[in-house]
Amino acid sequence: MFESLSDRLSGVFDRLTKQGALSDEDVKTALREVRVALLEADVSLSVARDFVKAVQEKATGQAVTKSITPGQQVVKIVHDELVSVLTGDSDPGKLKIDSPPAPILMVGLQGSGKTTTTAKLAKRLTERDGKRVLMASLDVNRPAAMEQLEILGRQIGVDTLPIVKGEDPVAIAKRAKTQASLGGYDVYMLDTAGRLHIDQELIAQAAAVRDAVTPRETLLVVDGLTGQDAVNVATEFDDKIGVSGVVLTRMDGDGRGGAALSMRKVTGKPIRFVGLGEKMDAIETFEAERIAGRILG
Ligand code: GDP
Image 1 (cartoon, rainbow, N blue to C red):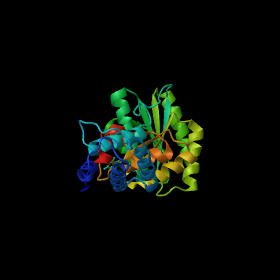
Image 2: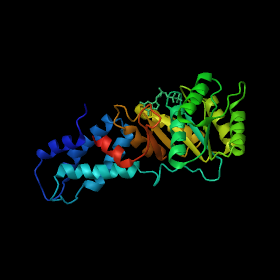
Image 3: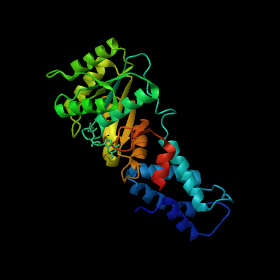
Image 4: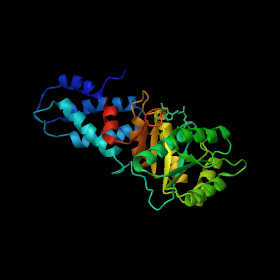
């Protein structure tokens, strides 16, 4: 188990003399602990370093508040800074789906949870927002992935585009668009092919689909447990395809969610949703406060 940052800091401050203001030395000692806690939460080294610097500037010389201990005070400054960095979108759960049928492009590596997330979001749009959603799998190299989306669609009561063997991804995307228009759907979601690693072909394919339908949202699905790798994947997808938001999956796992902080700092992209399990309801709108609390422990 991790020792929480709050516990670490109260330990540190118990050993320090109480003064009227946080001294440079107090702040430095405390921030060493903050840095270690961030690294343990899987925040990348450079992001942790920059973050600590920002906190240091805010904390040094700040008057000690009577009602809370210096340890609690530094925790509060760290918490507020975390929330400020993590917040990327005033309304992350609101998808741009005006002017129907609105295309949503789902991209990400194989195994990131892309197909599951596509179905979770389709269910959410259907049940919470009363939208008519059509889902289509473009993963022509993996028939099992296409079938998986079809099975999930049946399970959640959302239509999927009938599978036609031998069609290429752009043709499928265009057929989805036509069917969505003719069928009076509000949204059509395109679950693109995933690979284990980013390669030229994967990017070229996603770009061709993007150009064919001009998505209203391009959501990148990344495994929140993969830390720095998740950030590299996001940087590359954003450079090559352009993404409008990130979905972090497996946030129900043991990780402390540090990838969220690195993701925001490095890519600047808003985190829109978090995946919290395998079930179709296990998705929530991203909340900076919650992740900040989790990183702090
Ligand atoms: P894809 O290859 O990116 O389409 O990945 P899948 O959607 O097939 O997901 C791969 C596995 O991860 C499946 O067993 C999913 O049930 C599981 N999965 C997806 N999202 C989550 C999540 O948020 N939490 C957990 N624990 N498992 C997830």
